[in-house]
Length: 66
Image 1: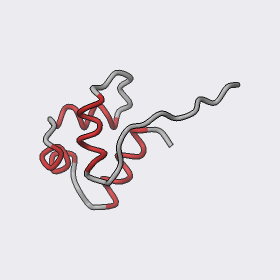
Image 2: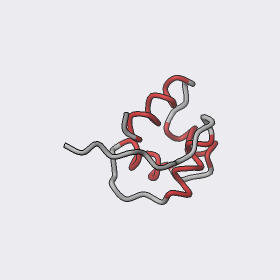
Image 3: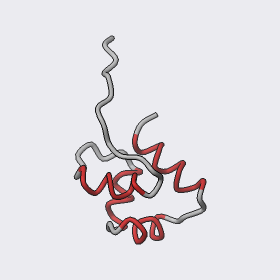
Image 4: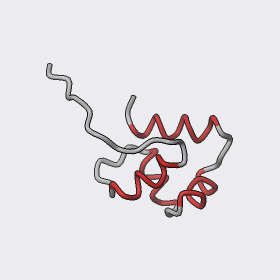
């Protein structure tokens, strides 16, 4: 699962709107929208602020070689 899908699904699971999750995570609404739209470049510290709400953090993931 990619980051945008993960955060969007977790947000909906706990019934939070984009503005609500932005406020709880201490990030801007624009940042949440960019994450959920799949922006390719994001600040890792801000991503972790959002993920921490759900008990997660960024970490290395093995790449799939095709």
